Length: 285
Image 1: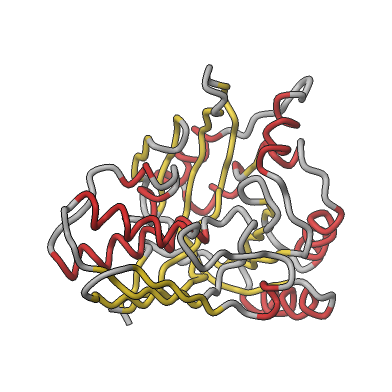
Image 2 (image 1 turned 180 degrees about the vertical axis):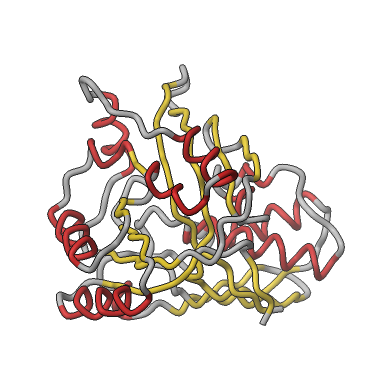
């Protein structure tokens, strides 16, 4: 079985507290977007085999483990163990989503493995969040208000069909360092996540006014600022970093301006694509 599995962006992302165990609590609006990995999975008699096809542009800066460390491998292992199955599978992942970008590339692969194995066997797993806080979201996708450590997910009205440019440079962001910087902010300006959720429901064409990401106050990357500047030059309505970085998305009204923006960013050596917001994670191919 083969599926395309979507990336996500954070239309808004706020950090609301820190738990005794060190985890931070968040409020966010997650949105799946039409930028995909492909996951091909085949049942076998035993064992788990994983292969990865990584574009040269990604391979230079982001190391993706193609063994038992990969979250997709862990997803298959969890599925078989929880369901008491003694079979195995072959998994091949063709990467289209840059890693270390705040777009959930690993989590969406894990969700795709669970989805495919579920379709192929009629079984499921009871707690996909064991694999990572973003995995449950990707089992449905679309638009969702997310809180807690990412495990509390409430679907929001459909926000699909919005034109985006997504771009990423070569600089990476350490999530631990980013959260540490958040903790040290003296007077953080919090995104209005609740207003964004309300606007998506009642006035979606104005919702972009409430896009925002607290991490932009804690993470200073020259490439992020350069990408944002170019997107604004090409008339993006709103430009925001996603996750703890380092990918940036811009909302566009004019598709021709979006394409010209992508051309400019690629000329400068950045990964850049146009896509749209989409209502679900998986497309069977």
